[in-house]
Length: 86
Image (cartoon, rainbow, N blue to C red; front, side, top):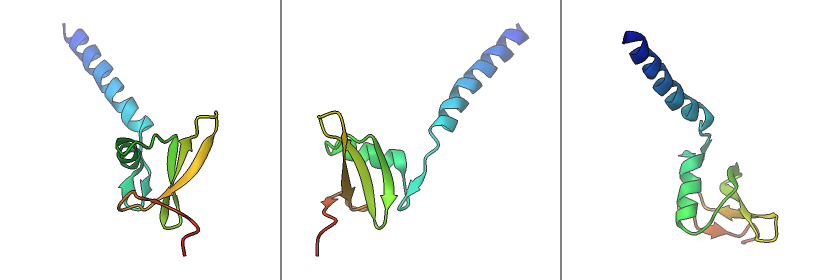
């Protein structure tokens, strides 16, 4: 019975450790990447990925034509910004 318990423990530990390693977040302006993606998604912006781009968060957003568009966001408010603002 002990070998079954140990095997079960190893299986559970293996399944919980792998997603943790696979989902290791990078930090973007002090926020975890997955947190930014989740927060943008909650605002209706589905992203393929996010990254730090200067003082902004750059998000790659599916455009509905099979490609992606780049959008920039303020890292603190997640308001979309224009790179050409003066």
